[in-house]
Length: 427
Ligand SMILES: Cc1ncc(COP(=O)(O)O)c(C=O)c1O
Image (cartoon, rainbow, N blue to C red):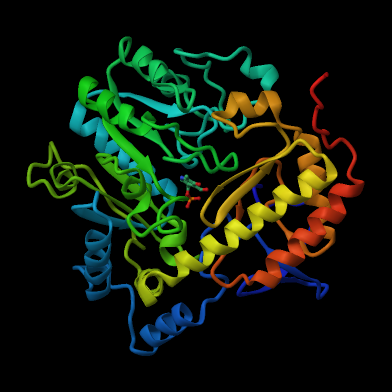
């Protein structure tokens, strides 16, 4: 369902920065398969590592540990300062599910805090309050929590009562919930990246750390989307805030299905506790499957090459895109703001960078954003076809790709209906 497009497109190939559909049309891809393809589609180095492993009879053994999984764990523990110990799963949702279960086991509490406008997977603890329409959201709840808005049918009422959504960048909201309930965990993306790019305000992530220590809940950074794309050490290294647990996925293996849950050893050891009453069950037939594990090792090797050349290249392209979009908006007198972190960005039709979902829901021109994306797809540029969603640049993109994209954005915005124009201050 979340892959449905209108009109329908059937893709048949992906290589580097490009996708091809069944009719032979080529697109410059910014959707990146929901963002994992940080190196581009079918990166040759990663592909070769996987093929070599299969030729050498790497298989799924289902018993014991494997050399590849040990190597991947070493790489992650070495390069992600907040990770002492790590376990591998198949999807980001599994990692966030296990993180919350572990937090409940450690704290003995049941309640969970998440973000209005955050996405942490499909399971019962987190399938709520994503892009809640303003009419349902009601007035801003500064220092409070929002009513529960499910994004899935079938979440038991008893479970819904355990989940509390607050505004991102609102420490008072977190404290408000902690004063009423026994909180096991707060889970958040360090930058909200399922509604574009919404940055933490200075001091916010540090404030979450302080509240976690005060109220004794586990702070979980969901770095499924931010991890490895913004820095090898994740956002926790960029912002220098140490969470208790971190979930990774997506860019970790450049599109192959693997996720990781890591963090402080004292908590991670619960997965291997000799006492069955304390042990947290972590199981999965395909955990540490050799194909995605080899892909993850090769991806990290690529990210390390030439002293982080991939990060320098994608930052340069991101800056070029941002400057180009700002120039187009200026030229056409459009009310627009670009929010960006390295290779990930979003163009919002509003006069400031959003600080949370409520701000966005109130000020962004959603219909124009949807129309812009649809028009770009017709012109061979493929963003995620839904308003406010992140655009993802990869290491395979070139300056020429960025310039072609900017030309197409300018052509579309010139004729697009409903784009807000800059308000000229009354003299
Ligand atoms: C921040 C974040 N967390 C968790 C998930 C869930 O990951 P998966 O789709 O691999 O289950 C996603 C997926 O988009 C995500 O963006």
